[in-house]
Image 1 (cartoon, rainbow, N blue to C red):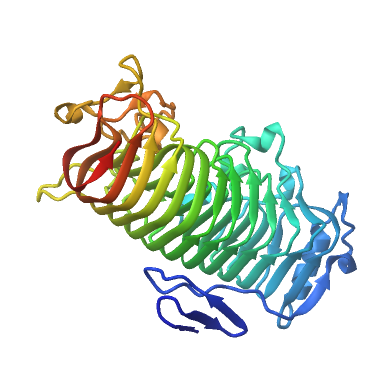
Image 2: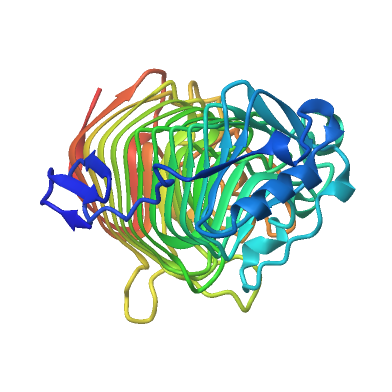
Length: 482
């Protein structure tokens, strides 16, 4: 593999990609083999009639195709009703146009999965329709559909815990994994999940799972060398969520040219909430986010991990609760520790149709004994945002409407750390949207080295707050306001 400079060509055997300049060398992208043995599933007894369970036949095809040098398990036109199928090393699951892998609605068809790893997110990741564990050179591709079949009351929202509902695709502890082209719809919980995977590419897929809370689009939990690009996502919860549930952490990730058509009750692009290990060297670029109730972009460290060297570049946001939400804190009681967030860059950010009068928050923890804050070096460059404002004096309650009053703004109390849960306690998830931060555009608290360059803020409504308010923070630069 070679990398020829900032705008050169990334060359792998049989593959030429023209890559944009990034802040770090791009990860190795897993690709399915160009030519391999084909195992068409009807030869193994799969009927594809949408009524007969084809689980055993599909698994026979996978196991047979895994022998020797591996191959392609092909689902041709038809609807293949199935419970959990487990992919093997050197196997590609190909779902052709006109073919649907349809999840069974019988919970007994999804055995409990126990990847041999200590990761906090396994409590939510216990069942799956398509599963790979400890595998190498594994691929899911095609123009067909993987349908979780969850569009009914028992699995559509939070009636059952996440760990009791199957994900559409789940890969764990694997290497050289790609998921390309397919449509993933109506997953019973998180849609496409990869946990502690190295050399991962999720490319050109469509996720359509707008079924309310706990229905994320694409999740990556720990791992390294990851590309998520050219995907279209409609989710009931977070659109694209990167997180860490172990000391492994997450590093060298590129998320680009994705379109989140909806993120339901949550966030368009999110780092956290799970934040046990470090999350470093991550680039988000050329993404479009629409229709997210919480934040367009959320960066959260609440489990002791460090978030650093993260760039959001050329991002367009519309109809979101707030454009940016950055929060450092500790959840889970007295034993919790506070991590760090530093070296964040927001470059060429455009946002309009902001739903709520909150403003954007950059909030760290109070300074330590040495006078240091754990949120530092946050840059906003070439930012143009139109905020809604809170309206007349009878509008939402304002917490600290002047710099002198900003200290009254309550600290993060350890609840679920989305913008709409900012005032929740650890035992409460009550949504609060009728509030306003001290600044109608930005409230910067307990942070240092927050800098605004070429920043343009527009107020579309009425508001008597200042545009930018800081408390126990070092803020540099300024914004043009109109």
